[in-house]
Image 1 (cartoon, rainbow over the protein chains, first blue to last red):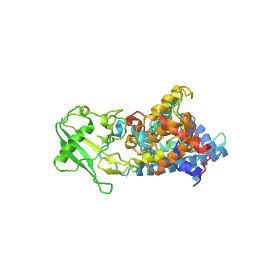
Image 2: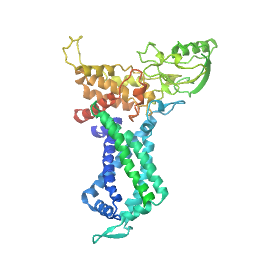
Image 3: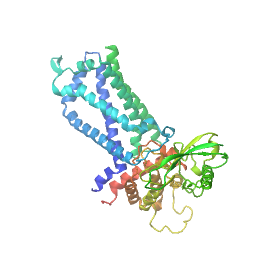
Image 4: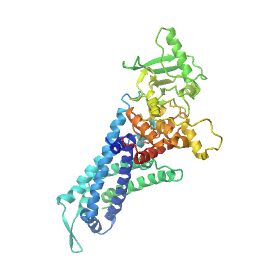
Length: 226
Length: 251
């Protein structure tokens, strides 16, 4: 291995990759949330369908899709590598241990929360991403142009209470993942400072709660009000 | 005080161990935790049994030799104390107390509650020193060091290397220990000269020893008997990243 691969396969190097990909995935959440807010526009889904058409055809977005995929792959790959290493670092556990007295539950269960999010992600892609690629969506006319009607697919999916429950629970898991992960990323990157760290910590909590709340409201809105 | 102790007994490195229950009677609340174990060991010796092996030296909280995972916490339930400074008044009559060794692949159990912490020594040997001759004690203020930096370096230097951070960490990570040693010297002019090579070599040795990675749970800093701050871990991450990016060590 050369210095580069050595750096990024060290324990600190892997945490640096976790941090950078984690923060990148946070930026994706913001874009995704803002775009999805079109769902709330009272126009029978026209704005949302135009938006989803743009996301599916714009070359910059299509390219970023691969960057996003890489972000997920590196984040998950390094999580697995780190978890394996961390488990191996303590082959014999304690008979009596009280970690709740010295650390937060979410900080100790990032892998578990991440697995819940991964399962959600796969179901989520199956629900909405795959149908846009297989051409199974019905057509809809908006201003004389034909679009794929993803909006109807969303409305239909969120009539199912199981999906609504799954989406809401997954967003709670995501919120806890981010509450620890956001500020942890800055610590791993060494970006701590007396002036900025208290803000980063507060911002991280607000960011996690607001973003996840925003996503969780969507299935609840369609289930209860439509 | 009468207590019930559940203690990890293990004959040697190779043999399997188990928790063994011992009743202890007539313990004074003024005794330290180690003195309580001394009482038990005297009883064991009198009845012809093998006494419980545990590490101790100065018994005044400065050497870092004592350890013990007591009731699920390194150095017991009190914050900012080593096991030798933990007094029995913090327990109640009739309590059951579990006592286990530090658990980490890098700290193999040597006997009973004694673990081999020489992994820490090897990390120190990999770069935790200043190899240039720094001469005698310099005149005060001959080397200008801001007070805040001097304080931070001194705080990091108070690490006694007991290993409670590793014991507390869910990943058995040594990041708090290594970062205290790295940042302490990276902040001062004498140490800055070798800062890049130091952090590269110490982190590399830390990984070789089989310690886990840092999940930033903060458990280490909570359990540290001398209050080493998590800021040191951020400093080390910063040092490591910049060293890897700019040092001329390509191996």
